[in-house]
Length: 300
Image 1 (tube, rainbow, N blue to C red):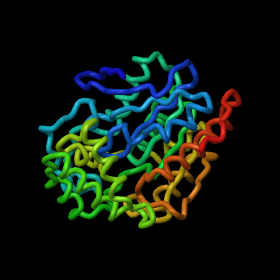
Image 2: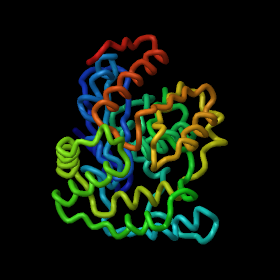
Image 3: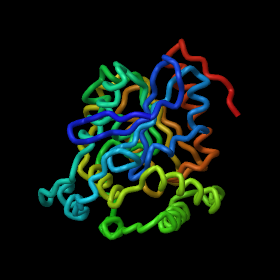
Image 4: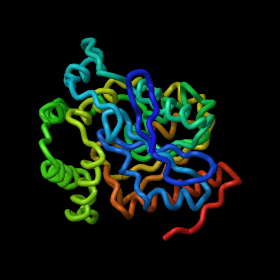
């Protein structure tokens, strides 16, 4: 466990394996700490000879949180649609710079990247602006531009009003999120509660999800620039994702030359254990195909 520094931002990260194998950097979704990438997810990557490094994006976990910055999400959404000039507290480029700080702190010249939701958007930003630092991309729940045109103001108002007082309230929130976004077959209140407690104790910060949404609403459209990306890319998306439309993932795949796009018919906008394990096995195979020095092993 360690910290990297990017200006006034401290970024927490953790190596999940010893050794000097190729680094694979794990970037979680909006408002979510790095604990979303657990041992179940890391095991197939480690077995393939990789060194997973999970990163707390700013405003999550043990990284710097800007709890006094309250974004006006409807105004930022309007600006992204061409009506106004409201800005988020920080942008996707700033979050990408945090990741570069981690790489520099660990003397990592190039890495594989696994990004979930906004984490994938950060990874794409790095591939576009710093192609020399990116070996491959694995994007789960992918988008490559602002979601301003598909997120209603009512949803943003709820995020701005959200005030999670304690662990019990966060557990209740996560159960509600799972009921809204997950597949019914994956709903397990006990499991969801346990994972929520792990996340809370690692670090859930007031307004963190709203600030991440602000950054994603103001995100640049990367599609044209992605045409220059020349790294092996895998995109995994759920047919039933209610947060990021399937069309957003499809256009991301179309924008990246040679990208592999796989649709999971049993996946929403959630990461239950069965999917975490499946994602990791598929990504390990993807990375092995990109690097003959890797040897993925069957991991149950």
